[in-house]
Image (cartoon, rainbow, N blue to C red):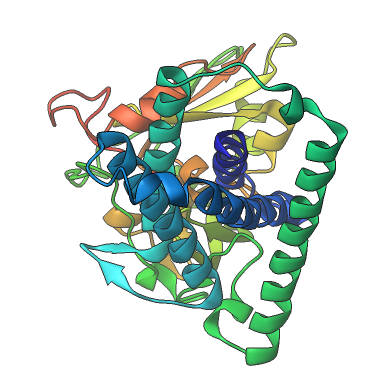
Length: 348
């Protein structure tokens, strides 16, 4: 049970990084493992029901009941979001709660495994047990497939979601799509007159450009898919990263490009992929608003929104990816406004 929950959590994390349609199967796998957890709960509850009622005052009994409720809530919120539920609680939608509760559930079960770890019994390694698990896995596949067919037949909001589960919002509407904030994000608007984007690192001729320099009207239509549950497709314009790198002269040992925000938020892309990305200063016919990353943001087709770094300060050509970027994106919104290494998170 705990291992299956861990698999559901791992595939859930994986889905947050997948932005290309060919990765649809990762989301399907997550759905199947989620239903597998639900099915495995049934024999688990049957097995412990006789021990629970007599031991209702036992802390272990209450802990088990709380964990079961937590698991059911996690799966209920996830299924409700997929179907089309739009409930918002404390400012968070059903998908947000599904992710949060899934994290808590995984931590609780991990602690349970450490505290009450027992060696596997011989019957746990038997062919019969493997066959039983296989039957439950097939049941999970059936339930996920049935869910998808039912949603399509009913024509709910969920039937119009992207393969990622995200719902379309304000496509081709300029700056009208949602501004995503993360943790303590409160950036001050940048002074466009003095702001410059630096291109540096493994290049022969580092240089800096203004927003006007970037406003070359090179265009790209791309979908911003936020892990918060929405997507929006827009016409973006600015300058392609490849053109900026060619002007700087990339050295032979270069393999990666790191995009760094004024806040310290940063992400790296392989060199060839980065060349096809856009440094956008406009969305539709409008200059980017501050909330959407003005003066300039990264537009990275096929990547989820957290990769689309906002409020860009530097483009750094590197020989290797940035090993600290996962930490940077999770602490940049927690530091003070005077610290440019982490003033505000540039996510989404």
